[in-house]
Length: 381
Ligand code: SIN
Ligand code: CO
Image (cartoon, rainbow, N blue to C red; front, top):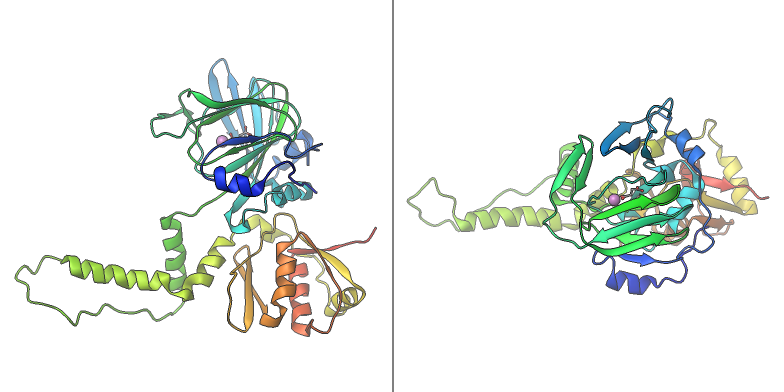
């Protein structure tokens, strides 16, 4: 378990989140790396995992994308191996992400892990999303500049965006267990002093394009009735080509009525629960029968969310069912099981023992979640 210490979350949220970069020294005391470079190299050999090596030699930048069958030819000069979505594959990496659960699941993206050689880095750049960079083994110098629009972007390699040097407002050497928080838009640059492992806990924030797309996709998939434009109060005009400001306003109101209607809340929630296709790759080969699950719950069992599973539900639901989503998939149970269910979704591990409140349908839901690979049975030692 990774727990943040010596770090006031409330103060951080008020002062830093989305506002100001900061260094949280020793926020994860006695930090133990959730994986090593060999594990990372193993992941980088897999088909569906996003990996790349970024190297620099005599001022020449090179980016090679995985999967890799061998590393010798690409790992030249000052190189960094980066692997995306490690939280879906390695349990301890998923646990490291849980340390940041004070930000809701739907805002989280994934864990990017990098292994870098002394002198290596990906160069000065700007990211569009918030990130906590956890220092694992080794020492790395990090510089962060102020947010400004004036940084010119360029590509030293077609797949690598960098910016010019910047004036640092933070210039530190991070040690194991230190964390650097960088809000979107702040230029930064890491350069390893020794060989390093770094863990970037990445967030996401939808833009209007993405949200409208989600709403439009839902509209196209369903046969929902939508309201039509009405203009009973039309007045005389003599320029038929012109659309009046009033008509535009009415059209925008029509749109606004749709997006502010509570009927799309679950559509947005479903969209925001989507993580990645890989998460759906691990159903049990032999699905467990109801009798087995019932026996387990009768005697009491600890269940845990599988690697990288981050469920999402609407916090206000007034219907007689309780709906939640995992990776875009919808699940529901009766409203009376809301407390028991949300406990399971909000915590990494939950102990469950049969009681009169637990219905057959709820136990079937648990079975489904286990068989799909989203929930795991924690074996007693
Ligand atoms: C890295 O770990 O080298 C990349 C992290 C970043 O700067 O976004
Ligand atoms: Co970055």
